[in-house]
Structures are given as C-alpha cells and as structure tokens.
Length: 136
Image 1: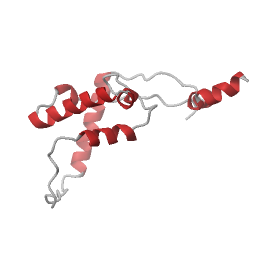
Image 2 (image 1 turned 90 degrees about the vertical axis):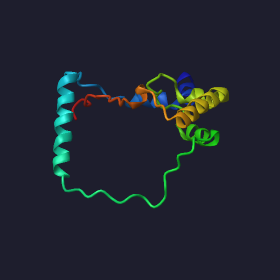
Image 3 (image 1 turned 135 degrees about the vertical axis):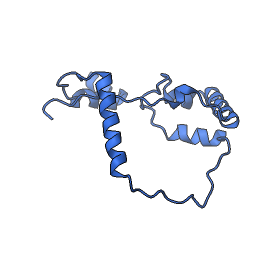
Image 4 (image 1 turned 90 degrees about the horizontal axis):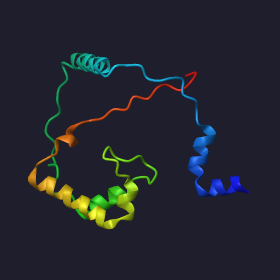
C-alpha cells in the first residue's frame, strides 16, 4: 500500500530511484586545463570556417520593444515545474505560483530593456561537467 502511495505522490521521483544508474567516478580535470582545451577547440573551429561567408542582414528588423507581461508569463507557463532552478537558485515554480513575483521579474526585464544596462552576471555562461555513467 505504501509503494502505491509513492507512485501517486511523486511518480517521477520513484522512476528516478528505480532507474538511477551508478556513477563510475568523479571528474578529474583542473579548471585551467579544461578552459585551455575549450580555447584550443574554439581556435580549430575558427580555422575550419575561415572562408565562411556571413549572410546578409535580415529583411525584418528584430523587435527591440521591452517584453510584455503576457510574453514573460507565456515563457514561464511553458517551463516545466520540475526543471532545475536558475543559477540564482530561484525555481520556475515560484514564478508560476506567485504572480506578484512574476510581475516583479517583468518589471526588472522591462527596466533592463529600456535602459540597455545588462548586469555583468547575466553575461557569464556556466558549464556543468558531468562524469560518464558506469560501463559506458
């Protein structure tokens, strides 16, 4: 009876527990070595596409209008509830269930768009290195 309750309570969590694969180890790479490797790969790609011809300017201009509340709301509605939180640690579920927080987010995005001032933190990309699964 308890296992049946677990299935209905959170089927995705139960599936993760049943099908979880064992990890074979930890990622043993220094951040500097990994960064150097990525730079080398990037240089190889630029050499490969040296003769690349850039396309002409698009016929339709990109919309530079600030995002509307409806547009922000539609993006949040499309996001999965179980998706991982942003780098700031705020889960998407918070925006779905708290409309005032969503309005606050919209206000920030509109301000960024109007003032053309983007935070330096928004310009930084993050990568997650995931070790291979066991016996793969």
